[in-house]
Image (tube, rainbow, N blue to C red):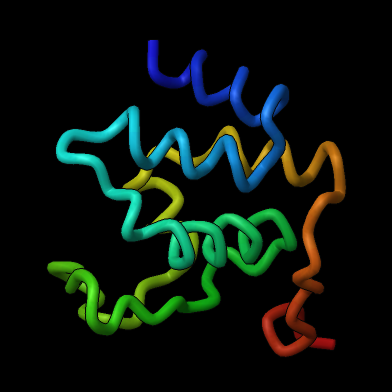
Length: 104
């Protein structure tokens, strides 16, 4: 149910508003405080930078990665793949692919 609602919110409300709603409404307890971190991770994955790390310093510590967590791990953990898909469909993001990750 939450995934369908997230897809609808991503399409109807736009990326940022939909993601805010998802973190507040589809998680218990709500994790709206993670918005900036999840947003950065989603943008990285959408731009094909899935392994680029995002700092979670001052919020949470991942049991394996500590406070430098790969973007795809964050997206998976917060069930945010629908927002990756939405960004890739709309191109509504500013992150460019990291050349170092692509070997160019």
